[in-house]
Image (cartoon, rainbow over all chains, first blue to last red; front, side, top):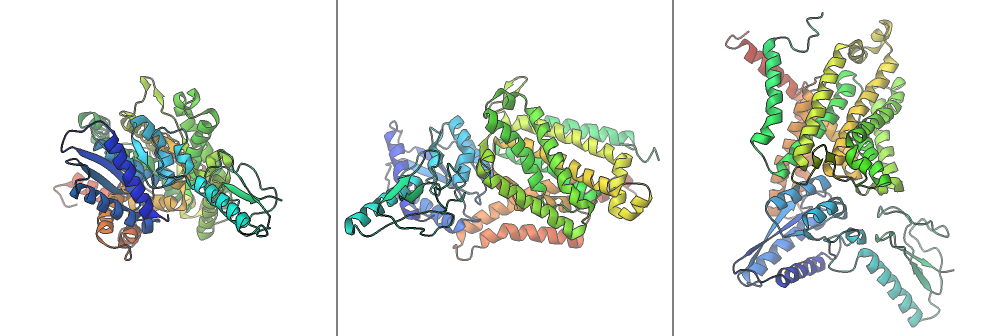
Length: 224
Length: 349
C-alpha cells in the first residue's frame, strides 16, 4: 500500500473530473460519495491515514470552493478489511444516495463487482489490480494497474542495463506463487520458486498472459 | 416419560410459539426496514443455522470443534463450484437453488463424517487440534486450487423464485424468509432428534462414553454422526450465505470465523437449542456496537496507538471470558430464569 498520497491525489482529481464533466448542476448542490476502507483492522496502517487524507482533501475542496457553490459530502466508513462489512457499508451508502463509490481492497471490489454493475455506480478503488476492471463497466483505475507498472519497470530496467553497459546482465524474477491469488497460467520453464536471482542473461524478456493480471502473476523472466 | 418428551407442555406454550412464528414472518411486511439492516439480520440468521450445528457437536455431544467455519465454507464452495462450472447465471444455479443448498449440506455432512473419524481415537484437546488441522487444510486447498478461484470471490447469480427473478430490492427480504423457514425446519428437526434414542446417545456419550458403551450404545458411531450432523447444518448455512452474499470468498471461512462460531455457541449457551439463537444475535450486535465505537476512536486518535484496531478483539475476548467465568450456561440460562419467573409470577417459588 505504498504511494498513498499519489493515489489520493489521483483519485480526487478523477472524482473532480467526473463531477465537473457531467451536466451543469444547480448551484449549491451536494454530491455524495462513499468511501469504505480499513480505518481499523489488518491494514489500518495504510487505511487510517488514507481516510484522513480523503477527509482533509474534500474539506479543502469545499472550503476553497473548487466546485463553486457545489460541495462534496464524502461518507467514510470503516470496513476493517472485511468484505462482509464492506458489503454492509455499500448498502448503507446506497440508502444515502451516493453517486460515486471509493473502494479500497482488491477483495472487496471483486466481491461487490456485480453490485456495482446492477446499481450502475462508478467506482474508483485504491487497489490497482487489473482484474478489478475485467467484466466491469463501472470500475475505473486512475493510473496503470499493478501488472502494467511491473511490466513497465521490467522494460525500463532491461533498457537501462543494455544502454549503460552491454556487459551488464539483468534478471527480474518474481516468486511463482499464489501470493496474488490469481490463477497460475503455466509453470516456469526452469526452477524459479524462490524470489532470488537465478541466473543472468543479456536481455530481459517479459511475458504475461491476459488472465495473469495481478502484480504477482506477471512473469518477468530472463531469456536463456 | 411420554409427557416429558412432548414438544409443548401446555396449550399456552403452543400458542406462544405460534404467535412468535406469526410475528417473525409478519414484521418485515408491517415494518419494512432498509437493506443494510436486513443484511445484518440475514447474517445473524445464517450464523444461527451454523451455530445450531456446532451446538449439536460441542454442546450435546461434547466434542470440541474449532474448524466449523471450514464446514460452512464447504457448503458455500459447493454452491460456488456449480456457479463456476456452469456459469453464475446458469439455470441450474438460479432455479435449482434449494437443491444446491441441500447439496451444500450433504457435502458438509460428508466432510463432517470424515473429520469425525479421528474422534474415534482422539479426545479433548487432541480432537480440537484435529479439527483445527482440517480448518488449515481447507484454507490451503481453497487458496491453491484453480477450481475455487484461489480464494478470490466466485460470483453466484440471482435466484429465481416461483414469482420471478428476485430483484435487488427484494433480495434481502426474500432470503430472510428462506433462512427463517430453514431455521424453523432444522430447529424442529433438532428438537425431535433430541427426543429420539439417537439424540439421547449424544448426551450419554458426552457425559460418559464408557458408561454409554456399557449401556449398549456405540460411542464411535455416535461421535461420527454428531460431526456429520454438525457438518450438514454448517453446509446448509454455507449454501445460504453463498446465495445471500451472491459470492463466495475465502475471507468468510477462516479460523477467525471458526472461533467466532464457537464464541457464539458459548455465549448463547452450550447444550441448549435456543442458545443457538441468542449467541449469534449477541455477538453480532456486540460487533456492531464495537465497530461504531472503534470507528469513532480510529478517527479521533492517531494510528500510533492503534487502540481502535485492538478494541474489537479485546471486547470479543473479554465477553467470552466473562461468560465463562460468571455465566457458563450462557444467555440461555437467563432466558430459563426469566421464563421460570414469569410462569410463577406473582409467586416467588
